[in-house]
Structure formats: C-alpha cells, structure tokens
Length: 214
Image (cartoon, rainbow, N blue to C red; front, side, top):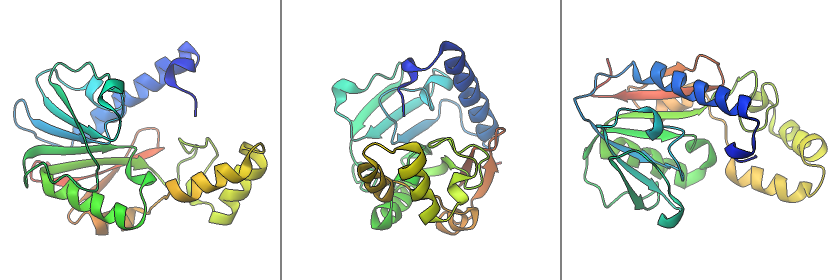
C-alpha cells in the first residue's frame, strides 16, 4: 500500500473527506461527556484515522508499537504510550470514556485477537472498533470487489497471480499472518451488547457499544 503523501492530491482529498464523514456517522451514535478521555488503540504514526478529526479539547492517549520518534499526531491533547493492544495493563479498568480502534483488529489473529478484544472492553466505558466490512464493494486493503467475502484459496490466488506476481510467496505469507475478515455476527458475539454500523461508503463498519451508546 502506498503512503498517503505518495497518492495524487485529488485522491488524498477524497480519502480525507471519507474519513471525516465516516467518523461523524460513527460518533453520532454516542453521547460522550464534555472533554472525554479516549484511548486510541493502534493509533498509528499520525492522526488521519481519528485524532485529526475530533475536538481539540478531547484527552487522547494513543497506544501502538511504533518508536515514539516516529509518532507525529498533531492533536494538542494527544499523549503517546508505546505498548501492545494485547496487554494494556498500564491502564485501569474503565479508565477511559471511550476506547477507539481503527483498522487494527482485521490484522490480529488467534489468541492475540481475543486478548485485544478483552482489553478494548476492559479499559473504557464505551468502545468503537472500525474494521473493513466483509462484503465491501471495493475492499480497502486490496481494492478488489468483495475480496473479504471470497473463499480463502481464491483470495490467495488473486494475490499471487493478479496483485503481486513478483515475490508472490512473501505476499502470501504476509497475508496469511496478518488478515482476517470476520462476520458481523462474530463481532457481535465478541463484543456483547454491541451494534454494528456500516460506513456511508459501505467499505468499513464500526462495532460500537458501552455506557455512552445512545
């Protein structure tokens, strides 16, 4: 995947608008207190997925595995803590009003996935988890229609024979270790009491729940 600054300016603007509008739709389902405390789990090196688009008076703690020198969020009340989504033991139960995870859980599998879900639910009174929709017309990682809903063998065939003919084995190995499209039903089971909201562009969905859900 190319870096954002490598994309054409018009496409950068379109993606920016999409993120802003998507977040507004998802966040409209919450009635958060004034100046809420938020933990952004898997925050990334910048704030384009979340912190760039929320009020400047929100108190945000970002958690990720990146070295601190690479993290460049510009939100005035953003604090970075290096750590794993599988173990947020540095935070107390319900320490935050909202736990946010954008574009992370689809890359986590097995026991790490289960631990991550448990920690997201534990550290905050509400949660918002954004992941690709399995039936997205254009899947956001691979750009292939309905890629997430295809049989696994067909996914690998497309990666090896269409998308990445050069060095196909390495791409297949990365794919096997780092991607999993889960159903709406599974996310609802894993996040008890949650509801699922589709993005306006039908490529992602938010699993939302907790005390501040409207």
